[in-house]
Length: 442
Image 1: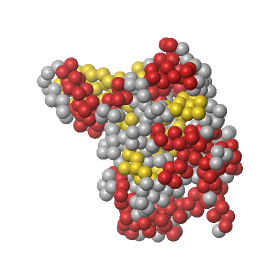
Image 2: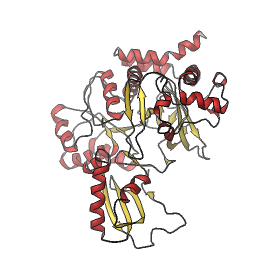
Image 3: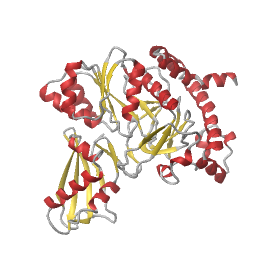
Image 4: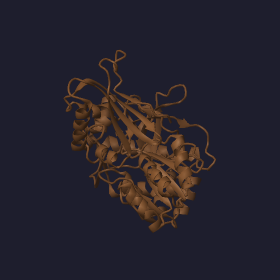
């Protein structure tokens, strides 16, 4: 028992070391404690604690476990819970308050671009601990206290901006976190302030890279991208212009995440704080990413269905960290695609186009790459008027409904929006019209 208790406190010890600015010591401890066997022991200790806590204090999980006949004392891995899952819809109905086990201290939201925003509750300590472990990941990829970092992760109601800011504070480096501001404003400050590490959404970094290619790039130690996929050709382009390596991190608003190491063969997952599963994998191992939180006592999530489709990389990484790695994402299980750093579903376009009377009920959104920029082409069949009037009305509705997300990202040049008129009957070639087509290559 004492051994499990000691293992169960390893991640907390890492957080304490980071909070005392002992980044190197925390990184070394995380590496030593992350043999597959020790990780499994840590997870078992924390999983039992989390399940017991949720069963006792969360109205949602108490009723879910009761209705499914779950005895949490017998569970040694989330997969043993059978058909017990938490879906994004559960955070909307019955709602996030039903998940609460302790009084919340911080609120975040998902972007709400895909549907009504979901609310996530945390305590101050949970966020500080998450930022501490995030700092260890930044250290592992090569960011050091002597570096000068600029992070353009958006703040708003979301976790990205504030969590990166907290992690950079733990590292002790000089950092600016202005949010997703205009690209030219950042470019003008790169040389002035000597920033040598850049953090931002992939689409934002690509726009900045185009500007640097035109006006001249400045020396960079590394670049870290987030929020959306990165095609190999775009990574090569960024690295050629800046003359440095670009790394990627993975995460979602609900909290789970991972980060590439210098070998860049998958995302090292934070298994100290989460158990990850791949649901219904295909013959190649790809399935939906499902995770269970292990350290969150305010609003734990058990077997949360992220909607991301990926696989676990089976080989051990040469970097020495033995935590499991997640492959690059193959897509989404719920038709959501990333566009300019935001998740977008067909329902978004449907709601907007319902307010454009010129457009019939037959339309299709096609997402593709033009050089290194995402392009969304709306192909519509008209029932009156012309394509210019329809596109103008659509833009007016987009600005009114999504000023802080899609409209802002379009204005920043993170994606292009184009319109084309399709001949009547040309889009519905099969029994079911594909509303959203993603033609981008990984």
